[in-house]
View 1 (spheres, one colour):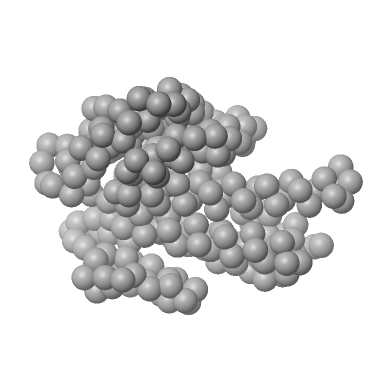
View 2 (spheres, rainbow, N blue to C red):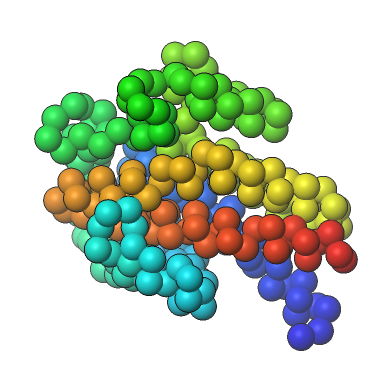
Length: 250
């Protein structure tokens, strides 16, 4: 592979990382409406998920790994997301998905009940299940170091899955822009920060969260994206340090 092909490969990888993190932010932030759904079920998402499927398939250690306590492997989870996007890519199917996701979001992530899934890290990683724990403050410190701040800081838990995906999307965009500008060392530094965040605050609970969504989401729109998000987090964590090393060596 010549240098130009290598540059294109890295650029596409960085762009797809930013895109997927951004898509998961939209899904689990409740921002699915007519306009965003058209993009969510469009060609860009289909292409990014196809790329993710290839990454999972190429990693023997992850391809057959189960998500949480479910019997679904990473391979199956990504395949379900690919199928979900493919089945709702046109016309009335997009509208159907939009209505379903708008109806299901509060039942799954806002209103306590049989279908409720807690969308914050702290209840999964603390013994008492309370919000605003030490881990929440550590998440906030990552945001502040990057110059980010939640609009409702101190009133809304920083460790919400959507906020985490937004942070990772913004950081991934910074990496992409740094690489495009030839600032490889800067890009590598940001990638290592992302690796640290993934290890401390995403991999600690994303499987359990996805497992809960898969079990409770009857219509399975959010289940498809939750499974894919968990798989992507593992794939990204497994390769982000290697990618940082590549950029540092250039």
